[in-house]
Amino acid sequence: MLVGIVSALPAEAQSLIHKKPKARTSYCLSDEARLQLSGIGADRAAAAARELLQQGTVALLSWGIVGALSTDLASGDVVLPENILAQNGTSYSVDADWHEQVMQHLLQAMPCRIGSLFCSDCVIESPDRKRDLVRRTAAVAVDMESCAIAAVAKEAKVPFLAIRVVLDNAGQAIPRSAQAAVDVDGNAMYKQMLRSLLRHPGDLSAMIKLARALKKAQSTLKLLSSLLSPSFGYIDNRVAERY
Image 1 (cartoon, rainbow, N blue to C red):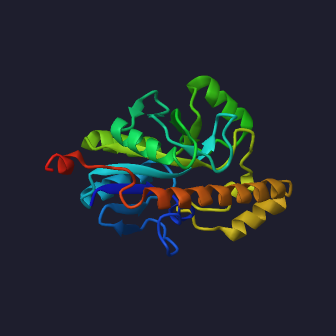
Image 2: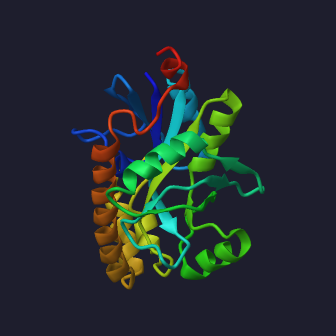
């Protein structure tokens, strides 16, 4: 087993397996890759990454959706970050060879945005907060898990890469009702969502827009999966050197 893939939510992991994924579950994708659903947030992502390493994977991949910070990114666009920025100022570089391998392969089929990915401990829900992050970090996108996975990879001295797809663009708000719609494992919370919509009926149009954006992001993730499976661009140099 080579690549261990961490994906926070079933909605992200659906691109990798044919059946409906279950939260916080591990799946063998092939002889070359294994998937672990983590749930939302850094602590859960780090635990999932460590579990994958214990299962014998030798490289870690952060897979899923991001919020755009750069105004030239749209829903469904691919972000292939060169480094991951933590809130405390720490920067984690991705594996250069792996990044180059994936980038050159994907550029034959689609554009990829290169740059920094910022990791937040909460949802960056408003365009104003996104603009503030750009001013402070110059990052092109934001997520909540990649930094933790990168930190585990660095500690274990294994290669790390992040492949992410834009959900919300820089000018798009994440409505309160959308945040109430899922729990930390990505399970649907219909009653909570409906209660939130009753309190904030103005969220409905933004919810519909976000649902359409999610479909675009999922479509791109599925395409990426088909282009990169089974090894997701990773070549184990320890194996290659034998030949």
